[in-house]
Length: 275
View 1 (cartoon, rainbow, N blue to C red):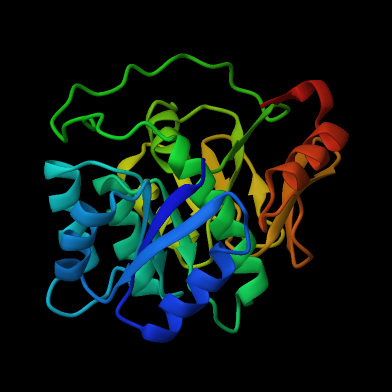
View 2: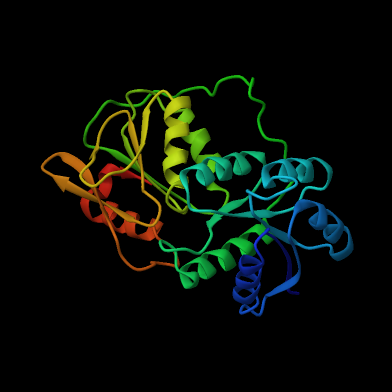
């Protein structure tokens, strides 16, 4: 059975592009579009979509407010399709915290329509399989118990995540002590979104969290997150690890790609890596 998708975006051009690209996949059926949340509300009732793609910045009611209402009254899988701006990144991450399962960048100079379409189709299919409606941890919940780790510069942790991974990464890093091994992370997410994600985690975690820059050292108590639209690979100089950030084609349909990071970790860290 096809995945029924409703597209919500105030731009007629974007609605048309997303519909055309999604319907290229035989497993996806775009059942309707809506220019704002008010129209979307009525179409959700009438069309019963399996997945919604949602813009954040819209007139009459912003996408974030609509998402919160939707998750309260009728939880369902939502893929955020947001502008590739720092402000858009902040809002999109708030949307993930509110219940969206994935963030995709709108097509533009940095993300061609073809690349965006591949990622959007994958995100819609993954969202259709997601379990929606679980209550997120309360902000006042008891702190996560931190586990003791051996202090060493010769071990690293490599983490890769895709749809829905932001919440899991946040939980993992919140549990890390200051003496944890260096951490290299690829979260399949566009640029600006990864920067906002890293900045928010740096504010809430004990360890240092930053968006990786070319040549950054992978050291004790630091987590490096691959920048969106760039691959990140691990390198070694003597006993020290560092990362290279570089351009390149999509790998396994993603950029940054978990596969690219993990292959470099296997080559340069071997038994010293925990993935």
